[in-house]
Image (tube, helix red, strand yellow):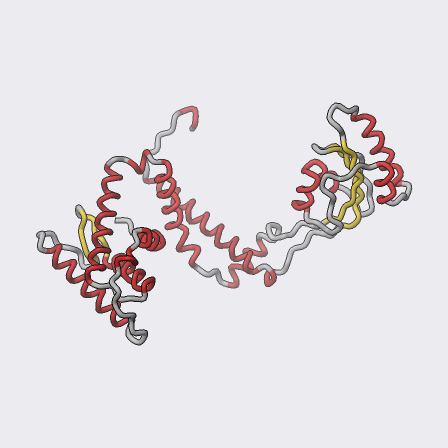
Length: 315
């Protein structure tokens, strides 16, 4: 039996509203919670096991029930009961423990019946849930392992380009709207004139006032990373801006909103932060790639053991 993840069990129990079924027993003595929990769990497991043994089928030592030969593990049962006791701050009675077990048996029966009906193959959402659960089970062990300082430093050195932050730029523009149905040539002629005046030394404010149109999205008067600047001017104009040197004026650039003439005010070079500054980011990327490698190896092993036949045109 594949053990159900703890998060799933907890949400399932709370969804059934077990806390509402817990009798109003006195609050647990804070000095003795572990003693109560251990003793109660042991009693519940023994009683459940004894009751099921009377049916003639032996329950494994690490289980509290068998459902068509599939064990319900004592560890899972105890975890659910402990979750209830933690939520309600009350010791679960024997009746509540038995009801938890009843719900686990009900769920196992439903899961088994669903598999018999082929829901794992026909239900797209269920297939997706199973896929994600399997992926998580493969990568969780890798994600829980803490990389050593040496591993992080080696990874950072090998992937320094990945962690390099792109340079930022500060740009101003003279914008020219192209009205629908208008002759674009006349608008472009104004843009060319604006460029000539900027090259001649006129201030961009004076050129904008004399020749330009109000900007759709005025550019912030600060250094911006390329991805942020792209939100204002679009990808085509961004490529032209990034090719400029500090103080340079662009040719008129057509975008989806109009025509632009750009002046590159300032440029900040790309920078690779030191490891200590971005250690958390480096660790997260190390873990992600380690998980990808573990999953790829697991899938390769599955393919080696499987009989996979592919249609000739797609081989």
